[in-house]
Image (cartoon, rainbow, N blue to C red; front, side):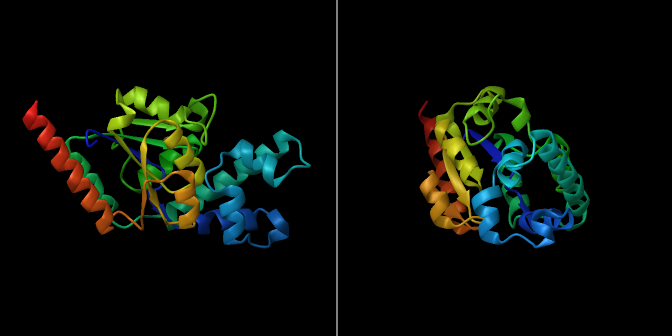
Length: 227
């Protein structure tokens, strides 16, 4: 289980705050900030074409996508100043490096956003493959992005561990046959478990995560010694 790791877009804090500010400043809902519940139910984990249809059902698609483009540009300006990594991210990345594991990122974010976020976190060159929604015919919650990530890493789903914080992301990874650790940074625990998360962690310093990683490391060492 410990040979390959796919790391996901769920590596940032304050994402919800930035997203809510973007919609409010651009006049969505007459400038009234959306609620946390609305974000979870309508927005979390979805790509922009889905969002434009959900948020603006009476608009034509191009008008909705133009709003989404404006939202993304504002988000990038806010993100460069406000976003910070989830606690324990550097520790996890070092552990992955020390173990010599492969790693990839799979996200529904547009390419400019993904590149900015990885740059802000100092991870621009960290992942061996980055799969975006536009790289596949179907984005999350379909398994296509994760399957493409597995193909790029030449990895088996049985030897892959996924970190996800959204229901569409967990649904996609489970459908691709992978084990998923749900991160409770921006979605209710029961929704992540219902989507198929194996278990939940609060951040990358969570003792449950490190107990699991140590167990996987021992399992790998025993398998190698016995081969």
